[in-house]
Length: 478
Image (cartoon, rainbow, N blue to C red; front, side, top):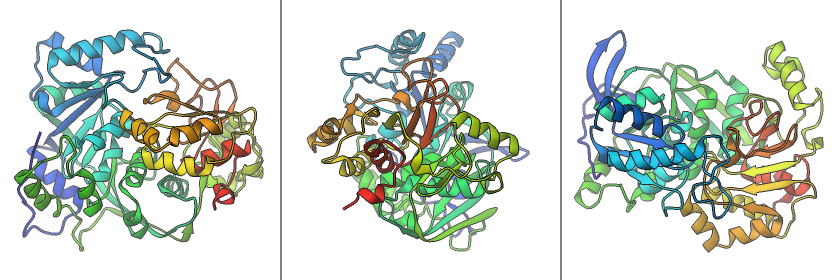
């Protein structure tokens, strides 16, 4: 899996980062703006992977290059200790067993339940160096855009497309438009990448990125660490973007060096030479440009049933005129969430708190939440759960004593997996319970039948769990 591309960008006309990656992967032009694109990586998970591998096997089509395909158990696995093959999702055990058998038969790498590398697909791929700058990477999961934080073209596909990518190493893709979103300003205390995402989506709407590959840039983005960039790109799909990406820099290169599937030795030096060309040229033209400039970005939280329904945590439920929603969507959201216009967000009492998901379950997320929880207790009546994004994150957190801080505060400490990021008939929060969550979606019944979800950063979730209501984490910082 050690690869290094040759720099093909010297002397070319001004291009965006995405244009460069696209040009390096075009196999054939098919007309009408559609191209046949080479696919460098295919990642599967057990909720859809079994289906793709089964269809290929039944059709007698081998995988073109098994070394470029990976599979993990994450979506429907149980996260309680001692889980084995347990799952609460109807039919889930059969999917887990079939995925295991078919992955082994196909000769692709499987990160099985309780394997040292197991975890959420978009968490373990960066940890292992599967995603690299300049690669194309696909997975049957809408949050594959997360991995664009490494300067990769990473996007979610359907199961049939996954079969095609596995069998041929290519996909037919219509070239999307390009957008640059520039964040300029300081990240104030208690503010992280999740707040940048919610600021963007609440400002321009959940369809604002529809049809675009979005490149994130600006001083606020440059200051983010690698894991913060993963969070920002993760939420690109909530902006309806094809994907999000960030030009790779020394932070990315330092992060990748020595990772299991990253280039080694001479190949590393060749790869670095190529990766350093993966920047949008200074005079590159984007199809659309957006700039969010703030003296200081602030903690955000959602009030309704779409990520665009977000306000500062110190704000109120907006009026219809302030909401940016259609009348029907606005009234439906108010009714579902059991709230009224003008209600202070801080007055909403909560029943649950969840820290996890491919958005916010990495070690830096857990450190920030633990810093809030240290020496404090979850409020009575609040069920609080923390699910690390991978076994690696869990081990590191336990080595640092973070698990002890979570447990002493009253959080459940779990095994890695997607857990209650989404409800698929398994474990959930209760009927009409109000939950503050570090996940990416607050759709109706996303975390349980009629569960009312408010999405926010891990530190806001921790602060709210302690307060027993939606809270401003800045009041709990030193």
